[in-house]
Amino acid sequence: AQSVTQPDIHITVSEGASLELRCNYSYGATPYLFWYVQSPGQGLQLLLKYFSGDTLVQGIKGFEAEFKRSQSSFNLRKPSVHWSDAAEYFCAVGGGSGNQFYFGTGTSLTVIP
Amino acid sequence: NAGVMQNPRHLVRRRGQEARLRCSPMKGHSHVYWYRQLPEEGLKFMVYLQKENIIDESGMPKERFSAEFPKEGPSILRIQQVVRGDSAAYFCASSPSAYEQYFGPGTRLTVT
Image (cartoon, rainbow over all chains, first blue to last red; front, side, top):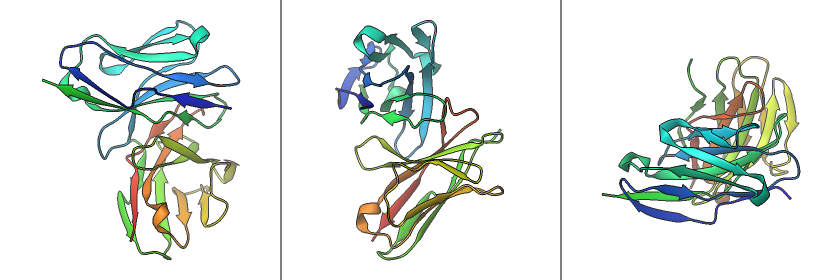
């Protein structure tokens, strides 16, 4: 069955520290992988996506993610977190061709000064 | 190019009333998806539509919920005879090619 697991419900980091948010997926076909960010009361904004090719993808706001097929993972990273990065982060997997997306339950990020 | 538009942003309905949620996709996007988000949960797929066609409604409850995407005008998610359990945020996403989705700001439905 298709699913996405984000093992960390909540993460707290200090401003300026590095960040890694974990995402594992289960998908029966070639996955298309996405990370979205959601601020309180807002919609989801696409941070980055992986379709094929280079397994390290760069996104907006200084984020990057690495696709590791052997581990079925697509972890999100940022070298230095800013206070404005505090939000909810969702990993999603889809198969293209109009197939539905499957979302993880999200990781809530708190940034402390 | 305006983003995905959803209205209303907030909707309050009493139990038994009907709720109509509207979604205008981005210009040039012919694929529309509806998702529901319950508090502290991820998004759950409901339905995928193209103009005048429902492509995948596997996530839609069998009763009281319906969706359409007419040739002209916005996509509509309709919930009849709402119950308290329908209270949630409903998000619409649109796509030009079905390979990536752009989300609207959502409609927050409260059933009293």
